[in-house]
Amino acid sequence: MGERSTDDATTPVPDTSAVRAIAERTDTAERAPEVVEAAPLNRSQGPASYAGAVNKAAPAVVNIYSSRMVERSEHPLMSDPFFQQFFGKDMPQRQRMLSSLGSGVIVSAEGYVLTNNHVIRDADEIQVALRDGRETLAKVVGTDPESDLAVLKIPSENLPVIQLSDSEQVAIGDVGLAIGNPFGVGQTVTMGIISATGRNHLGLNAYEDFIQTDAAINPGNSGGALVNAEGALVGINTAIFSRSGGSQGIGFAIPANLAHQVLDQIVAHGRVIRGWLGIDVQAMTPDLAASFGLKTLTGVVIASVVPDGPGDKADLQPGDVLLSIDGEPIIDAREAMADIAEISPGTKLPITIVRDGEKREITLTAGERPVASESEAQ
Image 1 (cartoon, rainbow, N blue to C red):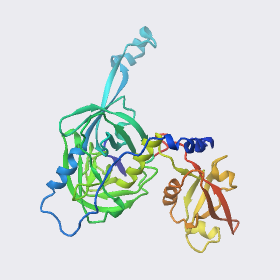
Image 2 (image 1 turned 180 degrees about the vertical axis):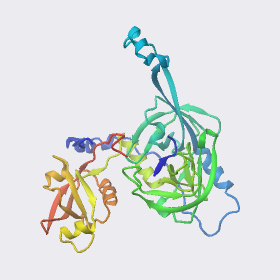
Image 3 (image 1 turned 90 degrees about the vertical axis):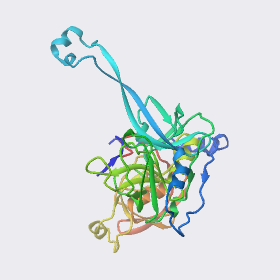
Image 4 (image 1 turned 90 degrees about the horizontal axis):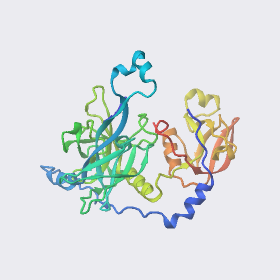
């Protein structure tokens, strides 16, 4: 269904000492990058041209060229058993450079650049090209495969910086401008509207809260900017729905607020710290609700409990129905996971479950979600 616009193992249990270590080094952690926050969008009238918004935002949108070296046989005939008997396992090899194109957004004068994780995944070298012609190598500060975001840093000075909007205020029908480097042709701007907000259940990332737009997004746009009519960053373009591989009017962007949170955490800690209950859940269905004696489709069913995880230590069991966490009722499994991720590890949470037809109140201490591998993050 969803396609990137460029290209079961048991979950490990984190060491509880990690939470203490995080708390102990809070004073020495990197401070959050200084970003420029945009004023609320003025919707009183639409401009005749969006050149002003483009001139404001486009200088901060960069082209990203990532490359990696792979080994390949010197000649296809080397795979023939006849030739292998002469060379054995020491057949001549040569390196081949694989390159990929993407986009990024400068969000701080300190040189921090936001892009998609899949744009720079497995790269041996990352080059960033600014619109003013400057080119520089970038280093990876950190990645978050579960949201498909990555933070880079470039050493250049006098950098153009994009303003960040409050993406919670984005409205369906707002004008959206997508800025990026589609197909490597150079920086390109396309226009559309915000088609929907809060899109999830797409199976693209572990954490999904996408802004949908019909502004044309194509391969190479990944990691680029989706901006509003005043040039403020609304989201990071990340994926498209396409049957042809090109734009079909359904593109998805990671909201600016989420991107800002990931930026701050990666710069401060080198990773994103998320709350974790150590359970897997599944959506409630009418048949399941009837079997548990529930009159409404509330809560989610605990499908499995990670050994020695927070849920296991609180005596949660597969088959329990999780009704609420910290007094908030649970309706959607994915939304519940996103809410849990925002909880600080070490927080004590009152939860309500149904077991054997009876409601029970349990107090659980949230842990830190283990860092997922690339495959587990999908």
